[in-house]
Each structure stands twice: as C-alpha cells, then as structure tokens.
Image 1 (tube, rainbow, N blue to C red):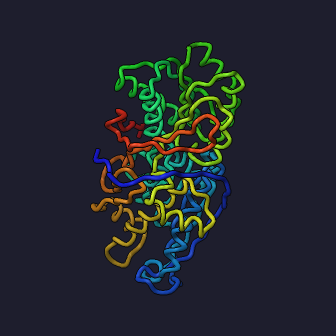
Image 2: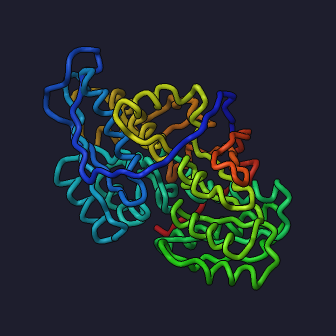
Image 3: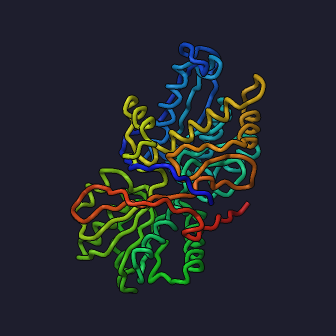
Length: 401
C-alpha cells in the first residue's frame, strides 16, 4: 500500500448528540445561500456512541449550503438514531428511502451495515460511513467508510503491543452482533498466522456496557499477561482499565481509536501503566487538521476521530456529488458517480489516498498512527509513524452474502 508522506495530528472525542440534524445549503460557485429544491441526504447512527460524526457532516453541509450548495440547491441532512437495535436500524433506512435520500453520508453505527447493506444494493444507493464498525461496512459493494474500521484498527493495536515487546498478550473484545464477534476472531487468527505468535489468552464473549471484572479475572487466571489489548468503545475500556487498577496490575494497555480523545486520557491518568492507541486519522496538532478544527470550532462540534470521519465522509460526498454528469441528482446518479470515481482524495488527514470506485468491498483507509499516554500524564503523545496493511499483516475480512 502506498503510504502518504504528509504530516500528522492528534484527535479528540466527546459527547453531545443531536437526534435529527437538518441542513441548509449553498452555491458551489460562490454565490449566496442556497434556496433551491433540497437534496436529501441521510444517516443511520448509534448516537449514544458516535454523536460527533453526523454533527461534523452537518457542519460541512451548512458551510456548503451557505456558499450556494449544488447550483443553488441545499443539502438537507436527516439523521436517525438506530439505538443499536436492528429493527430500529432497518426502519431508519426505510424512512431515508421514503424521504428520497440520494445517499447515506456520515453514518456511524454498531450495526448499520450488517442490517442494511443489501437494501443499499437493491436500492442502488451508496453509504459513505463516517465511522464504519461492523464487517459489512468494509466487505460489500455499496459502502465505503471514511475510517479504517475496528478490525484494521484492532490489528494495528495488537501489532503495536508486539512491537513494544509483548510476549504474553491478553485480548478482551466487546461486540454488539455475531458478525462483529466473528470478524474480531478472524482478525485474531490472521494476526497469529502473520506473526507466528500466539496470544496468551483471548475473550470475545463480552457485550457493551458490562461489568468486565470477571472477564479480566478469567484472562489473568489463565495466563501471565504482560500486556493487554482491549477492543471496544471508550467508556467500556475505561471500565476495563479501572478493573486492572483495582487488581494492582500495571501492564501496558493497548486500545482502539474509539479511546482517542482528551477526556479518556485524563480519566485514565491514575492507571499505573502506559496506554497506547492507533489513530485512524492524523493527530489534531498536525497542520493537516487546521481546516477541520476551524470548522468544528465554529459549529461547536467536539473534535474527535469520529468527527474527523464525518467531516471526511461529507467532503468526499460533495466531491462525488459535483462529479455527476447531467442535472439528475438521485440515488442512482450518486451511486454511478461514486463507483465511477477515478481521482483519489489525497486529504492528508489520512495516511493514504481514499477512493470509492468499483469493487465488491472497500477498505480505502488502511493506515494508523500510534500515540501513547504515559502513567499519570493524562494526555496523548504523538509517536507515529504511519503503518499500513502490509506492516501489520492485515487482510480484508470476508462477510456472508
């Protein structure tokens, strides 16, 4: 994989969620605020976990609308909270289709792709996920996430643990659906084959929001763990780290991008070991994020990896939208433009170029940047360098169709 030489940055994540976001639009030619017929765009998100991605999309769309939109037509943004419920997620998608949405943009959900991927194919619609999570976001034809996803991210996390000298790595993963659990397990097998190493202990039985005391006790009673890999969302992983503290453990902990926000590092400052994370996008203190940060600040959106993903998904959607030939803007024309995309996006917020294009699967973002929080520091420190699929032995994951 070609790795970009561009600079990097540090990211943040924080709460705040709007359940339905509606957008206005602007003239792409630089005129006044768009007042024409709205172009409807939708998103299905698990807002409890990922509020910032759709908020960032709204900020991009508001800016675009204020500048004139697409030839005077504003982008109207409808966001539905799927509440991590398959039935609710399916209904969100039905509502988006009924509203005439031309694409799904910035969706950030624990199960959206697993529930709705076939509907997108059948409806000739594309989804540019802000935070793709389940394996169908990366293994089907009509979805192209802005982010690397939890499976690439998890393998980068594991590789960092090994590169730091971990010989008895213990893994605890939390999942919301069977396909995600299976994908984590497949990724674990792939890394063992790539590295020639074996994990000391693995537990993929945990769900979200659990008490992880027994899971961690099970790991430590079955193995002498010299490092821990915790896979899941930030609040849950803080709970796992608290269990380690209670048990007097100070081994290095390796976590996912979902933990890469200032409040996480501050909340984990009392832990006696180093905490490491692979960022899916450039760290925020890098100049590549200047435009992103300025827009998020003006819109009051917390700066996080999830916000970066929503921002990039929205920017890529606008790039695709403006490439449509002719005056018809509907799901079919947007899908044709997305799959016909030939010029990659070289935004330096990613470590590699991004493209939708043709293909039965899309893992366009395949790079990560390491950061650490030293014991007692309460802050993330940028380390780098970018690592890609080849460096960590990542292979695209298969999904049942």
